[in-house]
Image 1 (cartoon, rainbow, N blue to C red):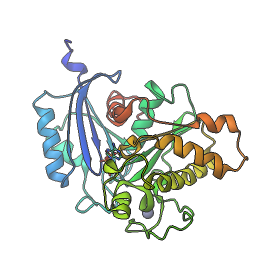
Image 2: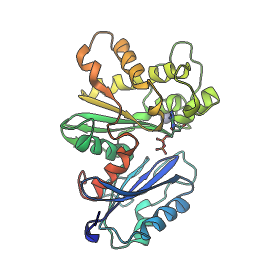
Image 3: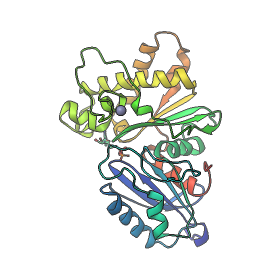
Image 4: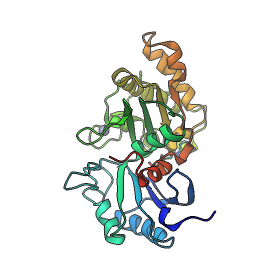
Length: 295
Ligand code: ADP
Ligand code: ZN
């Protein structure tokens, strides 16, 4: 495909475990993509920027990043990581680092989950929806929220993963969140699964009891989202969501914990995997680079 260099966009998805960098077009088409492990801030960004520089100067760069991160463009510390448990990242200026390497390139930033949700709303499982959420279950747990057609930012951005959820019957695992112990993220993120069962989520078979516990906690988190936002779609993505059968288990438990209160038919179709699979985040960052979803 021949591409007008002036329309070449760059996208960066920064996760707690993996980083994705890509070049592409304003419609979300990815031309080239590079995935590598997230390490220290400078090493990770240097690697992403070196890869991008080999491909020419992009017209703009869109970023979907893990948080907490200052995404309000009016803030003095716009683009800085806030109080993250991820060692070395608190206070790091993502936008400052990129601006020093590519000073003339506009940088647009949102959370990893907001950009993933925007991509799913434009091209995937939430097409046409004005009220939807995208949950990631990966190194952390978070949710992007679309309410009345607008992405929710609020004072910072939503922190779905740090919701308190009731303890599953018989569960005495204390959780891994350094701030809250047994919040949703502390109980059900990838690192929580590893700490609880002694094996990474990717290595646990579909019939392992881990998945019933996982679905139980997610169903309670989703019940809270449903009760507050009344979305028509809740997309569950992120690395851990690739576990076979997990979406079905979450839907079944959601019906159980909803206990007949919400419309049964709505509950049948509410929870879905991302139509864009593991590409939702990077595609959303590309759309953001092109100005779609930017504020
Ligand atoms: P990030 O948090 O960097 O965005 P991911 O969303 O890919 O990264 O999440 C990483 C987590 O996903 C790890 O805890 C890993 O064990 C888990 N994971 C990766 N592949 C699978 C799989 N096929 N099934 C279940 N868990 C998986
Ligand atoms: Zn927490």
